[in-house]
Length: 182
Image (cartoon, rainbow, N blue to C red; front, side):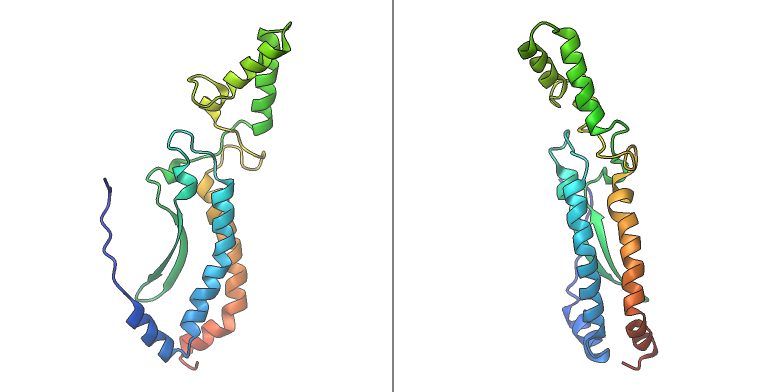
């Protein structure tokens, strides 16, 4: 059951009119913005922390949205998962989780490599309550991401950097559009 209600309108006629008035500058701006954000969205979906509890819903919930407002056009990446703002990378690193599982496997079963591997597999099984991956997920891929918000690290920060470059590239076209001399 949905938690929200969306009212969608077809802005195609309005968009066509704005394109006519701006000689196509509006569409080229939106297309350029979408082209700039597409690789960021693809990387965010690929690098998102594995959502073991909800079956990967977080990684699959990234969408690109265009919003036409009275004074601006927003092209943005959103994540529709209701818990997206709380998703963080583990404070533990991926490699340290694997090393700890190996060490604990050798500790518990020092004379049997096969039994030590079974202990290691159990400690890395996210469906086993109390296992390392049950508590920490797969771990953060790097120190830079350890404990950080997934949305900020994967979408907001790269998006801001990319938007600065995009806006600098589009500055003249935007100035002409704002002055109405297009």
